[in-house]
Image (tube, protein in one colour):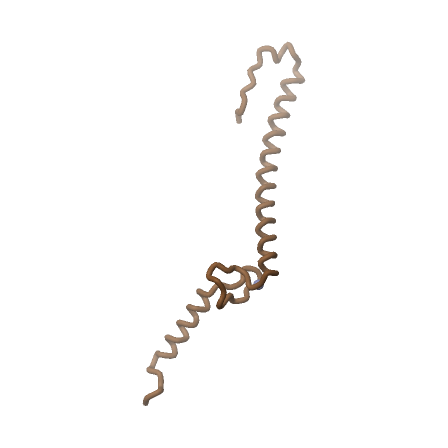
Length: 103
Ligand SMILES: [Zn+2]
């Protein structure tokens, strides 16, 4: 019968549609499909783009804070060690060798 799709034809079309749906990117913020947009587009609107930008900056801020906290702890440890040495007194620290950068 002409006009009738061959058996399995509709399945293939469905599969193709599913693949396209999975492959087509969606907004990184609200999940709206980004059909007809630039391939490198990550958001559906300027509003979502701003939210994504803020989120990225916030993540970068958190990462920076973690490394700052680690550096502060290391510095506090070093200062505490120096304090112990300094409080012993000048007669003791005379022959004391401070190893810089030692961990
Ligand atoms: Zn969006």
